[in-house]
Image (tube, rainbow, N blue to C red; front, top):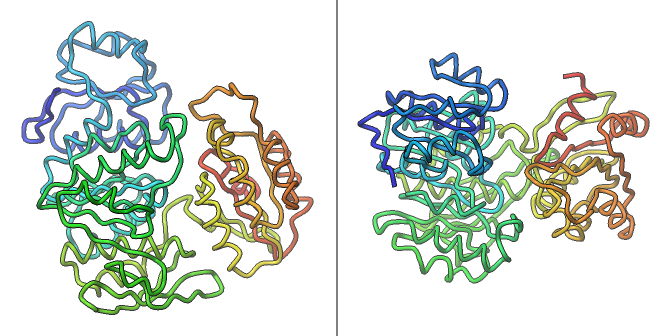
Length: 462
């Protein structure tokens, strides 16, 4: 396999350079002196940013984009072997790396590489860690899966020992990484278009734990079932945490948790040395208590004073599409959340129910046909925490609907549980229905990993 040497910049080309992760990696390498080019199907804000930084971006995937002077080509999982640029690289015998392989090799260049994994909570936890490191003036390089306001995007290029990234389990991407510190936030069924079952997923996380070197550390949620199966593979130190009050078996656990009227928590955390510190968050929900404790454990491991972690977490206002307040229209509060897994939905709606409101509306856009089919009843159970549920069509993402599943099947499952549910194929129909039926004092949350955020923004005219 071709090895990237950050001290010896070379000529590199990205197929799909406009993706949020690929564009970030391109900028990291360009900053290090690499000669970077890439292609994408169409122009976007991200590609324009790359062009403004002197990176060559070509539109359309063509064989002519691949030239013999390339040292290496990088592709995403969305690119298949029949792609003309991929084929040209093979014919010219140009070394080829996947996005995950490239990211893993970049991590090798940093003495402290931190990888945040888990079925959910990765972006929020990575963002919290990022803000703590910046408050500590650690000058980290950061790759976040969402837009973090404190860095004005999803990427920050630092010049210290610290490199922080999310580590996604889908297609086993994270097994190409080289973390010195790994976090595992939770392990649940998801991405069943790739994994066979939960045991298969757990095996991958065990393999991720095995990547941690003897001088490194694994920070892991104590509440993961059969924890020893995962941690026994780790060669380094293991630190456990929980967001459940009084679970003294964990290294970090809260002794008290309370919430204000916006569901924002204050909690007292007890650490492994017996120290107790009170933290207040300005992002809602018990799940963010768990995310924050994981970030605090990481900060403690890096010898960052608790006073810095406390201030950073108090200042943290979340990332885009993570229970993000969008605005108020006619006395109706509109929030948006990225939740697309039953557990995430349950956490977001539980937080919403703890906020002051008259009725709780949820506009949920299911994400992918396979996930909708696999978790139909679980989706219905989680969504039933809302008073009213409105469903547009399923967001297909990378899939073709081979099963015939639809949002109307989810509507039926909700109605079987006694929850008022409505299905409208288009966003226009959803928006008209909401305008006619939402009233002053209602809380409306748009939810899903697709483009459902547009509904709230259209209503607000933003």
